[in-house]
Structure formats: structure tokens, C-alpha cells
Length: 311
Image (cartoon, rainbow, N blue to C red):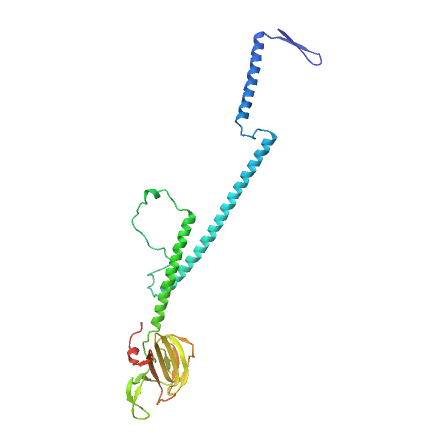
């Protein structure tokens, strides 16, 4: 078969011969291409999810799905940031409590008078021991960060309670030691009269002496033999200018015939603190301090206490 091709302006023509074999091959090629394209579109249509066909409506649905996924990712990110913030605050709280424990520990080492270097909160605790493998079921299990923080918080709670009890015991012991009556009521002086029966210096008769007398230089310091609270500071019949101190546990001490008082009622005094000046006020023959020790309302011999060692 002869085919003639004429240009649009009729200026030129071209002819060529097409055999039946060539026409048959061309027809077969066109039909095959149409079948392949049709089959492909049919497969995509049958296997696509409902509503996902590439139409205008399908494209809009895909955009909505992507938008929902972006929102979900943003929510997860915000939740993670909130958890991190909460953990940061929790860790800061635990750090503050650990700092408080360190301060309590330092105070305890000072109060307990531990040797220098015997215990230091600045050093990492010295620990050790042989390695023991965990049970099989726990080989691959790891506690979560939140569980670990909660466990640390419980341990800190326990340590704080133990520290509070221990510091209270040490403080009470220190107070008890300070309230322990021991030592002389003067820095310098000599024993001029003992406890018990004696000849009264004014009447010459036998009389009971409820304390001891320590003579010394007028105006010299009279000191407390133990810590306590001042319950009397002023004139008292027979005693002259008197200072009385309650030490707790049923103990009271008295310091009489003073020239001047350095404390007032309600003051808390410590062992060795100057509380008065030696004088000769009241019923006295010269500068000295009349020193009494009263235990549960009964006068006892002060010499039992002035020569014993303090705690």
C-alpha cells in the first residue's frame, strides 16, 4: 500500500510504501500499550485505600491526614518537654535536699568533735565489694529514670530523718554535758569553809553551813560551773547579792555575797561564763563566794562536784 503525505501549504509531497506486515506490527504495538496502561490504572484503583484515589477530594484527604500527624507529633514533643521540665525541677529539689544533708553532716562532725579528716562530706563515699551478677530475669531490665529518681527521693527522706534524730541526740548530749556540774566557781581562790557543821563566825555557836566558801580577791570573776538558766539575780536575806542557776535534771547552784551581778533572770549561761564579781555583801566577814549545790531540793556537799572532771 502506497501512502502520500502532503504538506499543509501544498508546497511539497512525500510518499512511502507500507506493507501489510508493518501495519500489523504497528497495530499490535498500539493495542499492547493500551492494555498495559489500562491494567496499571486498574491495579492502582483496586489496591488503593478507600477515598485515596488521586482526585481533588483524595488529595484534600491526604493533606488532612498529614496535618493530623503533624499535630500528633507536636503534642508528643510538648509532652516530652513538659516531662523534661518536671524532671529538671525534681532534680533541683533533690539537689537542694542533698545540700541540706551535707550541711547537717558538717554540723554533726563539728558537734561530735570528729578528728580532722576522719569524715568529710567533700569526698566521694568509699564503697566497694565483689561484683555479683543479677538474676536472669533482671539481666535486661533497666529501671526508668522516673523510678530511679523516686527511689533516690525515698532514700533522701530516710537519711534526713536519721540525720534529724542523730543531730538531736548529739545536741541533747552536748547540752547534757554542758549542764554537768563540775569545777570551781572561781578562777583563783582558796577554800575557806567547808560544807556541814561549823562554828558560826558571828555567834560562835555550832551552826549548819549549807555550802562551801571560796575566798579570793574582791572584784574577781565568779563563774558558772555548768550551763543553765538564771532563776535569781539580786539581794536575798542572808546571802547578800545572789545569783541562782537552774541546770535541769533537778540541779540548782547558788553564788552568794557578790559585789556585782553580770547576769539577769532568764539569761542562759554556759560553763565557765563570768556571772558575778566577788564581794562581801550580806552576812559576810570578807570577800568570798558562798557556793551551794541543790539536788532535787536538798543541799548536797559541793566538794563532790567541784573536783570532778567535766564531761
